[in-house]
Image (cartoon, rainbow, N blue to C red; front, side, top):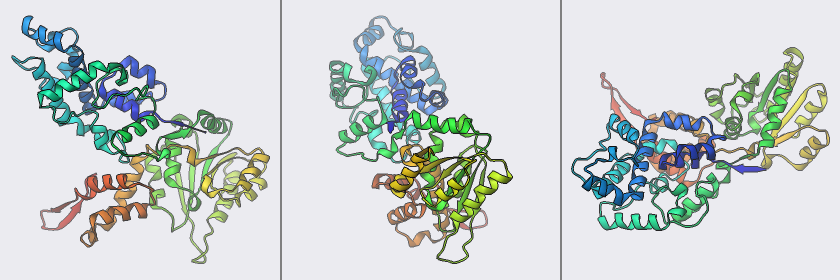
Length: 442
């Protein structure tokens, strides 16, 4: 069983300027740290304040204009505007207050500021989302044309109940219920609005609380827990997705992660420890015969050593290989929780685990939409390794090759985003000694 994530819609809700109390009641229980992160991000908060100003101006346009013309007030002295937000924007270098201007001038001004600064928030969203689709929710095309602004104003006021939290965004309003209810619903509608389709549910589907709670209980009831990974038979990105979506305080109770690796596996395993708060022991198993891996044998003996020598009582075993049942059944005094992948694990071993009361869950149930930092690190590592021969490649073909080398499944949009962000921006530099080198934008 899986459920939709909501971190993307929570970020959108913050940026467009919904009330803080509404944000907390809607998303705060699931993402208690996200609000703090967003509030500490100057670019995100600046866009939020600008969107709040734009929405308030639309809702009180005539009253604002009257207060300016007849009461000689500027917007920082009009009670329905947040003067503190305005002062903060001014401190950050945004010129908000205009002299001798009317409401229509402020409308043009706010839209200009949003258009010129929204790209600063691109890093808040993963590369697998088409940024232009997000950006279009904030930027009104051809807004310098007065008739366009009047049209958007009339559309908003007529359909205000169909706008998320009654806050203005640039879209064709339709009664979808809450557009920002879940990431899955939002992405489906967003892509549909752009005549596109988003179908990768692994990016926004996550394991239900029961699965997570079973893992927490297993760890809490153990004297020492080790996570043992058959790297040859597991996906590093899915594992990171699992760890990223579990409670940090709970998973940090794991004594260590032991990676049993083969020379031919994904080099993403080398980067795992950098992004998690758990010690990692990385064991690369040398082959005796070139065509024969002995990772499974080394892992089985390693688990026995941890049990008998290091007093490890419980193991989270990450592999879909049915051969490990021999290990589990041979150590009845130890506790095992098995993590599989559906595509690699047959019904026989699952039935055996069920029949013997060994709990198992699947990596496939955990969301992989929030693992950009690991994927980016591996991709850039592969890119840096190829820089000396860069001119012999076609840039777009190079991007595809990097994803293949990193063993990352991605659609054309994600590959194109990486190409535009990192490959097209590669710079040729010359140091003081006259040596040439390529540099990648990190």
